[in-house]
Length: 161
Image (cartoon, rainbow, N blue to C red; front, top):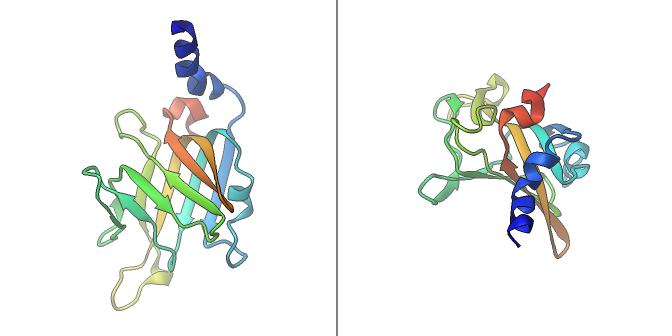
């Protein structure tokens, strides 16, 4: 029994030594009500993620105290989040990204990046960027799939190279 527990605990680290998927996507995608192809092709295993999320899509974040809210980009830079619920553009593909701690997962970041094309009288203009090294796990739910991306150390993805 103990050997089985140790084998299961080592699975993500061992699996990370294999092929690393790269998911590079802009949200919203090119087709209305569909997730971009890069997200639709996601498979279980290690993934280097680089998402840019532009208005009108609005991710929700779970703060360290467990409360959920929208991401407020009153300035530009890193945003602290325990988890981010990412609107993919599709009701059939749900995505939750858990960045982890900066000390253990230095490659992972959620940030508000300056994007002047989205500025108006109420906003400085921004896109939200989520990037880093994760282990993708899927959960089948009625009429959809939910992806939960758990943090991996940067070395498990060769820091995006």
